[in-house]
Length: 373
Ligand code: SF4
Ligand code: SF4
Picture 1 (tube, rainbow, N blue to C red):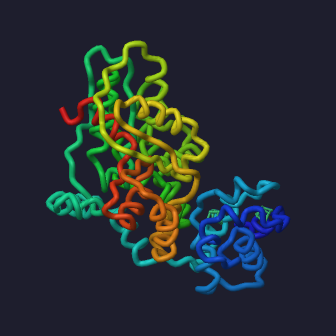
Picture 2: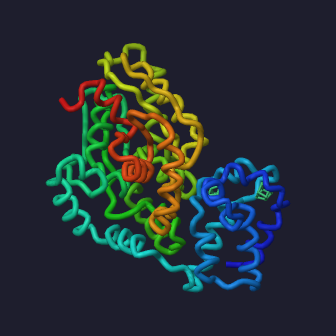
């Protein structure tokens, strides 16, 4: 990894401070070392050999949520994500980047399917109130075909959603079947590569991507891979050679183009939509919210942009800071039910804001269409 390229990228920062108000970690700590501008200065000093990768230095860098708010606010558009990813990969290469115990555990579970399955069976035995943040077992079919299908949709079973809420894939298949589409689930034994990118494991990331591409190469005809989790979608959009799209975007397109839509049953409730940082640029999210707004009796609005504290791998290394960011965003508001499109957002909000309900975005539509049959 050429360190001068990281240094050159950092040099694009003119230190104007326009990014500071939008940075959740700076807002929570008021410490410049936890701001985008401060982190860039620390990275530059490190790659130029003027600072060591000490625990204090690492805490500033690794507490970044990769939320991208700084990139959006930055007038010269400094490539923060690229700088951050390259720096992390460099540290992994130099063996100075150390995983937290939680990150090691998560990586271990990801690479050992039998543990994931075993935990899933245990989690399914727990009462619902305490089972939301433990793995769950749910029997999924590989193929959800309907007669006279308009098209077959290939839907990725991503590791986080597949581990913690596998029933969501059943719901998604139910919605698409109701709209006349067949669904085939693409099931991997591990992660698509996104988690490995978060923790700087470039080799494992590339291996996961090539496993997925190999798996998909067996499917004949033109292929688009659909995802339900916005973090995976964003990662695959940047790295996969096969077209990928959010399932929520697809559903909103189908909804717009179909003349005779199924009847929606009413759902009483006051829902608010938390847009995951990885969804910020995806117009499909807002289009899907418009679909949900057609559900009779359901009131649904959108929270202003902002990270929930679950961005990147930060909450698995600095949970106190992550939790304080979640508190700031949600506890000051009187909320009934939050919906979101990203499993790690859902788990983080659920953990901190319990007993507030947090649902995956497909849930209200599936329920309104009559799920479970
Ligand atoms: S990515 Fe988010 S948390 Fe990280 S420096 Fe930028 S605004 Fe702050
Ligand atoms: S807004 Fe951009 S140029 Fe200004 S301090 Fe932040 S990163 Fe640097």
